[in-house]
Length: 248
Ligand SMILES: [Zn+2]
Image (cartoon, rainbow, N blue to C red; front, side, top):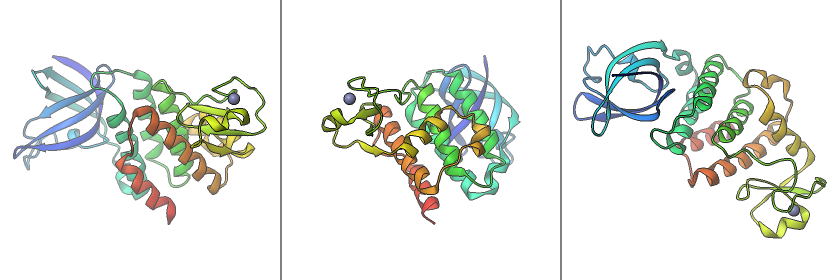
């Protein structure tokens, strides 16, 4: 029998009444968990097996899955469901983990980041894009792909007067190196400063960062390209919903 805290990333129906869950656990990373009977109308584990639900789990390990033995709820993050922006950005945070981490790859720093992120998101009413950029940069950094911002990632040039961001190279490149990545994105001083600020600002202090809506959109685009390249994906489904929200 194993015991660990975990947050449900995703649920899938299995046969008539069971669920296969993807749970991000503190001790064992992302794991697949069979929750038998979770769809029965009077199931005792409905609240423990929904996305966002944060529990202390008791599991046992089978051949293909872990099996849910017991779950004690720590936080259902119910408040996330009360506002469409919270749901969309929250689902994106879950999908980022679901799509970028291998099964069994533990990462306590990312676990704590997700927990802190969901706690803050639960009470948020504005500044969602700023919040999610600060979250994304920390997430990808904790995964081992921190954007390289100090000097040109290709030649080491420290002159930052005329720079672009290269998602492919994972950092800024100087004007001597522009020709080496034609897909790089121009960074003016405001954008460069903004990325740096959002990398280092704690998630609960983002109100201290002042950036225009236009800057935020550009920075988000850059960081998303950086993430997609590093996790080897072309897209993330929830990004489409974020784009819809941000365009209205
Ligand atoms: Zn260079």
